Length: 552
Image (tube, rainbow, N blue to C red):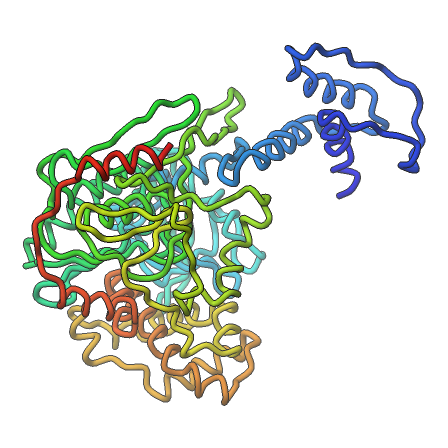
C-alpha cells in the first residue's frame, strides 16, 4: 500500500510547494527543475505525473495515479464532490435513472447458491416462468453453485444489453432434475417507491427510498390510487432516503403545494440564484400530512421536508436529518469516468441552508452521525443547540432552524427497547432474511393466503417457529442467548413475520407488518388525529427578505 501511495504523496507534496530537505532521512540526487509560471499553475500537476511516469524507479500505473489525484483534490473541496471511475459509473447511475438492463429478478446468495427471491412483474424472467424459490445452478452451462460466487459475479453474468439472451439452469423444489430457461434480457425498472397502501379507511402510507428519474411519476400514480381508496390524510416516510435528483424532489413537493409557492432555490459562485416553484394541479394540495425523517434522510429528502415545513403544509416527525445541502452536477469524461462537482447550495423557502459544517475535514464529516449518537441526540432532543443566527420564521409563525439538517417539529427518539448483543449478531449474520426465505420455500403451499389481511390475521411466529429460527441462527454461528432472547424476542418475531410477508406480498406486506411496532408511525397517527386543516398562509415580504439575506 505504501509503495502505491508514494508517487501520489510525492506529487501532492510538490504540488503544495513543500520543500524536501535533509531532515527527511531520504537520499536524492539533483534532477529536473520545473519552471511553471503562476498563470499556468495547473500544468504543474501534468508535469509531475509525466516526470514520475518517465523517471520513477519502478513501473507505475498512470491511470491509478491520475484517479487517486482527482479523488484527493475533490475530497479537499467538500464531502460530496466525487470522481467515479468508468467501471463504476453504471452502478452509481442506475438507481437514479430508475432502470437497468437484465433478466428482472431479485436474488440473494444463500448457502453459496443464487436464490430467486422474486421476479419483477412483467419482466423477462416472469415471462418465461422463473419462480420465487428457484435456485440458479448454471449460467450458460457453467456451474455457479458452490463456487463462492458473489453479488458482483451474479450481476456480471445475468445483466447485459437488452435483446441479448442468457440460458440458465435452475433447481426447483419437488421437481426432478434441472429446468432450463433461455431469457431475453430487457429494460428493468428500479422502483424508488418502496410501498404505498392504506393503513386504515382514511390514512395512506407511502415509503420513498430515493429520488430518481421515475420518482415523480411513481409518486403521482400512488397518490391517485390512494385517493381513489379513500385517503384523506397521508404519512410520507422519507426515513433512510439518501436523496437523488433535485428535479424529483421539486415535483414531489409540488404534489402538496399550490401554484407559485417557492419549493427551493439554489445559488453558487458561478451559478446565479435559481428559484423553483410549485405548479397548479398537485394531487394532494389539501389533506393532513406527516413526513417522517431521520438521520439517514438527506439531500432531496431534506428539500421536500424543508419545503413542506416552511410552508406549514406538513408536520415533520422523527429525528434531525443528515444535513446535505449541496448540489452536484455530473460531467462525463471521454473514457467513461465521471465527475460530480458541487456547483451550488440549495435553500428552503425561508432561506435556510441545510448543509452541515464540513470545515473540520472529511473524516470528521463522515463520523458526524456517530458523534450525534454518542452525544445522545438520537434519544434526547435537548442535546441539540442552534445559534440564534440560524433561526427562521415560517409564514405561519413557526420557528425553524438552518445550519445542519431539518429539525423535526416533533421529535421521536430512536427505539432501543429491544436492543441486545444477540440481536446484533442475528442482524449481522442476515439470519432473519435467510430463514424467512427458506421457511417460505419449504411451506409455500400452507402459506398460500388469499391476501395480506388474511395472512396477517391467521399467521403468527409460534414458539416452534422461533425455536426453529434459533437453531438456524446457531448453524450460522450465532449462539443462543437466553438473556438476549428475553430482551429481543418480540422484535425478532416481528421481523421474521415481516420478511415472510415480503416473500408473499412484496414490500407492501413487509412494511404493513413493521409499522405495527413502529413508534414513529404510531406517533404520526397521533399527530394526524390532532391536526386541524387550515389554509396555507401567504409568504410575507419580511420573510422573503429574511430568506434572501440569510441565504447569501
